[in-house]
Amino acid sequence: MKSMEADDGKNLTTLLEASKSLSGTLNLKHSLHRVLEILEQRHGAARSIVVLLGQDSDLHIEASNGIAPEGQRARYSLGEGIVGRVVQSGKAIVIPRVSLEPMLLNRAFNRKKLRGEESFLCVPIVSNRKVIGALGVDLPFKRDRDYDRSIKFLRVVASLIGQAVRVERLVEAETHRLVEENIHLREELRERYDFSHMVGSSGGMRQVYEQIGRVSATNTTVLIRGESGTGKELVARAIHYNSPRAKKPFVKVSCSALPDTLIESELFGYEKGAFTGAQSRKPGRFESAEGGSLLLDEIGDLNPAIQVKLLRVVQEREFERLGSTQTIKANVRLIAATNRNLEKAIAEGTFREDLFYRLNVYTIFIPPLRERKPDVMALADYFLEKYTKEHGKKIRRISTPAIDMLMSYHWPGNVRELENAIERAVLVCDGNVIHGHHLPPTLQTAEASGTLVKVSLSAAVASYEKDLIQDALKSTRGNCSRASRLLSTTERILNYKVKKYGIDSGRFRA
Ligand SMILES: Nc1ncnc2c1ncn2[C@@H]1O[C@H](COP(=O)(O)OP(=O)(O)OP(=O)(O)O)[C@@H](O)[C@H]1O
Ligand SMILES: [Mg+2]
Image (tube, rainbow, N blue to C red; front, side):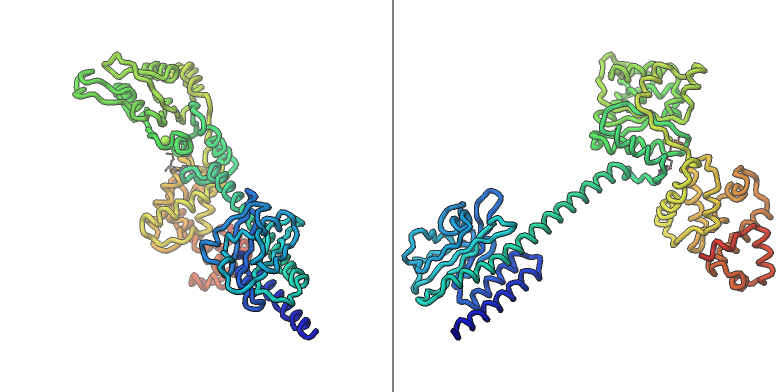
């Protein structure tokens, strides 16, 4: 009786330690091994294994103690040997004397070489009412061992293990789900918003991103329209680099930059001697873009004679080099861009209607910057960072008045003009804040009227003064008396100027 009580106390300590080990870590193998070690130290288990059922219904050793590495690789099928039977039936098996048991496979450890007699006890590991594995323990043979009690005890250990496995699998599944979701989201983001450094998340730009996403997978001819400097070339590149042709060349031809006489040879190439000066054969841009994409920029500036030739390539996807009769097949994705009103050009007879319809298969319209005000600051910050880095400056922010000026200007030159304005400001800025007076003169008076007026000295000074006052108010959180001290003036003068420039000091009090 005394020894039974001592056993109970020992068993309880084991269970407590086992449960602590199994719940304290997310490394299942490690905690299982710790539990088996406890069985060795406290209960004299010479060997022990935890086998788990894999997806292909075979059993592998998840953790073991007292078994050599070769033995740890042992595998069992369901129903095979003692372990296999325990998992299949869900019933514990006790083998009091292993030397007398022919069913033992001795796969992980050869018991035939044992000196003393041993007993083998194996209990199922259950999780969610399903048998998922087994716990097997080799104990020294004892004539008076109470096997029922031992099995009961091992069952409790096995149920702790079952719970730990269940938790680990849940965590694993959840992690897997999160990773999948993350990959999916990133993919979606990349597809939708990461188009070669395009900035802006206004409704207008989101639609552009969506269109790029939709059309880039296809071979469709795309016509990109928008005012000068809105980012047509950037969109063309985004289409190419998001398309299956991304690894092939992206070639750009500026139809307005080349004189009419050169554009044809530039597009289609020429043979040696095709015209005076043609000293060797030269491939055209269509050939250079083979397999990739060709951007025909400023297509509205193309002369009618070339328009006819282009129409043929667009329709038939073939052409000849100048001075050659050999027809060349063109596998090229065409992207055309223009800031012209092509409908008007058609009406005026300067652009061919048939070419227009061939090009106008899928149109992406980029709205002017003044119609997507939310993008102005995002772009300004983006260019500020870009040029601050490029010119090795330490500019941290744009002052509130300068932001107001950027926001109220109508940007006829669109993103390109904004980019130039910020680069200029970075160059002339000598502190770490961009102020209103660092911005180009066109913005100085534009704030009020939205139109361009020549700047007078007094207007420039006034703008600078307003700038300084607003900045001082910002750093004193709208406190006029402290702001006046900052500017070495009196509160009376400051209040007068605040009124004069219509500064709302309340907005700095937040
Ligand atoms: N959404 C944007 N994000 C970042 N940079 C932009 C964006 N849109 C335009 N830009 C930049 O603005 C400048 C002008 O863009 P781009 O050359 O693509 O304009 P465009 O429409 O082709 O103009 P143009 O009709 O004058 O040829 C480029 O330096 C480009 O990188
Ligand atoms: Mg362009």
